[in-house]
Length: 254
Image (cartoon, rainbow, N blue to C red):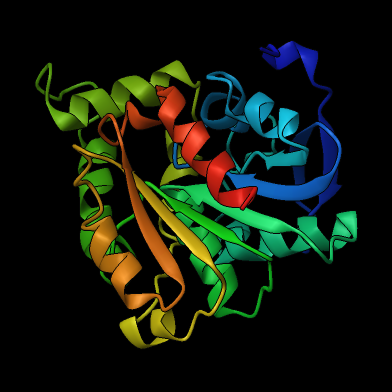
């Protein structure tokens, strides 16, 4: 599978002047995949072979690094982190690439961003909502309390705790805690009514032991054209499993 260095880094400029990075793999129908908090395009989509699997199935896989993540610009200026800015950035990428007929998906924070795009009028052919359940969308501030604890206790968490594991992942990806805390606070969710109005055929896919963001089955039940699939793993490990990429591929090629 490709290494991080194998795929050239492309750049575009967001509406506020922030320079953001993205990678591509393959040719064919475009699918934009958005990674999760603390992660990168490489970690979520390339490292474990999911992008390669999709490219072999005939897709042009487009994978941005969120602002303050990976190879995208990071800033400590609060003005660079208005509410819902990640959704604005994703729309800016689609405009930059001139995408009209495309698919869209994301993991965790990327899934929440995908849902925000759908609520705000994005019209992909299909959507993938991965690692995100109903409460993670309808009760954003409540879920974000966990990450505030992570930031507040950096270097002090009990070894083996959920907060400790999250901090360890943050260090693994080289994240900037100051910038990432501001990214977290840009989060905007969606109401059950807004979710019920989404008519894009969608896959909700979660690890069988993932309860970090509520129930994926409940989220799929509210969305009229969504179906729910479980794969092995929890919130941290599901993206490492081959079944994860296979579930996305099988849905998109239908």
